[in-house]
Length: 246
Image (cartoon, rainbow, N blue to C red):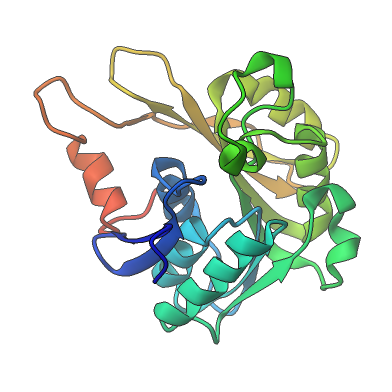
């Protein structure tokens, strides 16, 4: 294994993940996205912007009856994602496709999916963020804006299919506005650092052509004030002992 690549274990040690030492590294957001994935038995799911497969492989491990495709535009990250799929004996159910979300779903050349998950880049205005290291800029900056990611999601799933995103809490209104023309039945779970602090992240689940009323679910609180690294609930989710249900 090259010195520029490290191997980590996630999902309570069940998933081995090789990733760049200097580039963007899968972390808490990927783990929460995987825990929120509720694709069913025999269904197909695509992740837009899968990176090295942190969320994708954890989701595939959690959902052994489903099949997964990861779309990634960075050839180096895509190669690591394929390597990680093989490393975890998931290559038969997990396929990595190189492509850019900005090109649209049609460019992927695959039939529509039952579900889609994504952790879109958090920023689309270079002036709003101090430039990250070049190796990380592609994961942080959405060249075509959040609208490109929601448009991709709406084309990627069938009617009645689900779209699950994790993003900054302050972009929630934008996410809902971009998805609402063709999706509904929104379920929103805030993610708070502590019980007494505002949410920094939101998990949003939508159903294409869904009509059910929006539901604001209880927040996931990541840490307590007693000195533990994670709250009991968050630790159980990160270890893969429970799912982040909807």
